[in-house]
Length: 180
Picture 1: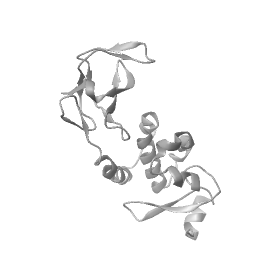
Picture 2: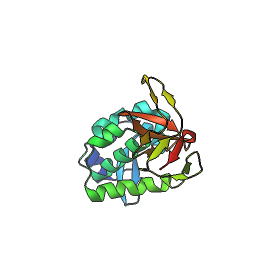
Picture 3: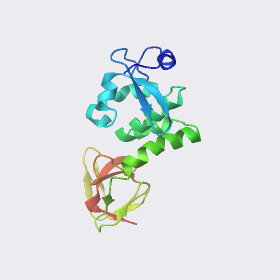
Picture 4: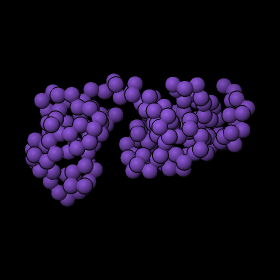
């Protein structure tokens, strides 16, 4: 696939996500009709970035691009990787954020996450823990009755959610949660 000359000039002959100069190709950033230049490595795992998560450390640089299409892809990839700290730093103009989220909604719509009672859980819901859960590596126990607000759904696994307990971001199994 040939790359548009203006697009190649804009990218400086490099992948706009990781900076590689090898195996470049054009990638359409839907739903708008805009494109970015990506390399073979980025192309191989762009749909499921978790299969090569270490490669995507490059997003800490490319997320600051002045090009909206690159910002959109950085936002989508960071969201799929669950890199909330980097997402918290990333500012997108409202129309760019809407564009970025539009591409994620179709993927998120396929995932159905339910609590222990079968109630549907959505991004941003609040849940209550139904039994004491030791938190591996954190040195504390998430107590029964603790409220976890503003949960984050884990795209790869409908049996887990991400939330903050005692100020620590942890993954929780949905079988031990009840929607509030």
